[in-house]
Length: 314
Image (cartoon, rainbow, N blue to C red; front, side, top):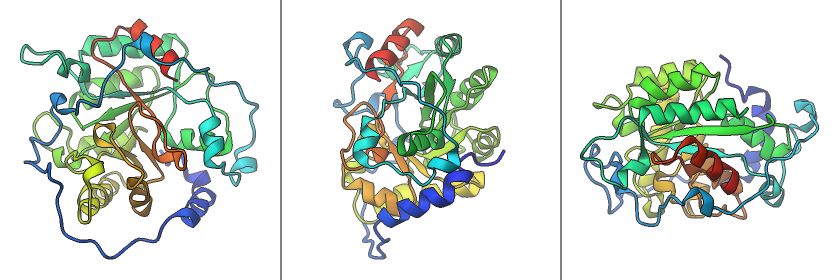
C-alpha cells in the first residue's frame, strides 16, 4: 500500500520547511530526572501524573459536529495552507486514545482500569462506532482537512493506540480490520520485543496492513523535562528506528502522558514531526498542529458512555 500522504508531500512539506527552525548541531549531554530502567519506565498504567484525568462523559463541554463541506479536488487546495487561527476554527475530529487492550486482572488498580480496556468492551466500542456510521481517518487526512479544508467522511473518527502493548496487535488491529477501520499506533521503541509488547516484525506488519505507525518516544519520559541530548534519545533516534522498520517516514508524534509545552514544538519540527498529539488540554494558539487533542477511551466506559464523550468533547 502506498503511503497515503504522497500526493500532498511535496507542496505540503515545502511550506512547512519554510516555517521550520534549522537543526542545531549543538546538543549537550543530559538525561531527565525521571529516567529509570527502560522496562519500568514503559508506562505502567498507574504511572500517569495526577494532572492527567479522564472526565466523565457528560461533564465535557459540548461543541458542534463537523459540518458538511463541498468536495474540492485535492490539486486545487494542496497549496492553500491555512493559518493557525483558521485551523483552530475548524471543527475538531473525535480522536480516541487507547492503551492496553486486555481483560482486567485482580492486581489492577482502580486508576489502572481507566487505561486498560477489557477485550469484549473494546470490541463493543468498535462495533458501536461502525454501527453508528463512523469512518476512521489517518493523520495525513486530518492534516489535509485542517490545513486546506479538504472534506472528510461525514462521521470521521481517529483511533489511536499508545505504548506498543501486544494486545493492540493481537486484539485491537483484527477488530478494526473487521469493519474496514485503520488505526494509529504510537510506538515506544524501548519496549519492542519485550514480553507483552509488540515486536519489530509486528509493527512492520501493521504498517503494511495500512495502519499508521507514529512515535511515542524511546521510554516514555515527560517531554516538558527534556533538554539537550534527550531530544536525540527520545525523539530523533526512535523515529529513525521506526522508519527503518516500516520503510515509511515517521512524521507523527504522541506526547507521553499527553503532557507538552510550547518549547517542545520547534524541537519536534526540527526532527521531522509534522503533527503531534496530546490529550484533552487546550491547543497551542500558534501551532495547533503540534497540540492536537485526543481523549482517553476509559476501560470503564460502555459504548453509550464513549459515544456521549465523543459528542461532548469534540
